[in-house]
Image (tube, rainbow over the protein chains, first blue to last red):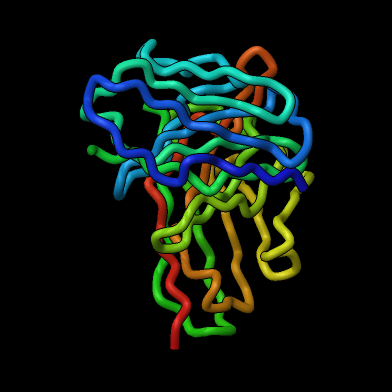
Length: 107
Length: 121
């Protein structure tokens, strides 16, 4: 089983700041199998990024994903108020696995 | 409109059973693998199970193997999760989610609103 570890656990930033969330895998992951999701309180998760770097339909271009192998990154270039949420990376694989989540909170 | 609508959650005693349903209107249900994902209160997302489009193959997380059964009725556009021998640690919001491929890359691109299962005496 591939374990995903996200850092930091909590990120405190202000609107307009740049946010960077890291996702490290315990073994190499195919970039095709790496996705990012956003979850707001009381809501279901929403797909942001798939294939490590491809934005899902309707996702603003301030969201970007990068990385390969065991290290992946989600970047939000200029935070807007609606971006404060919890973010999860996920690897698909034979048994899909989510990282533990990163809470992005307003500073 | 494409959507997923879960139902069937509620309060159940330890050792009891519950069946969740996920209605899937608005898209060709049989073309998609489907998954169940759960989230304990205040915790992260945990994958539970998946089923192929024709229902012929299922895979489960170790934590639920032998207790949970995922099935589907493509004629009714509905996914099911039969949960037996429930434990307190199964308490969670259960989401159904659609598996779609974009350029061959797998995604969970559509999610239901979730249904809460509480296991308690």
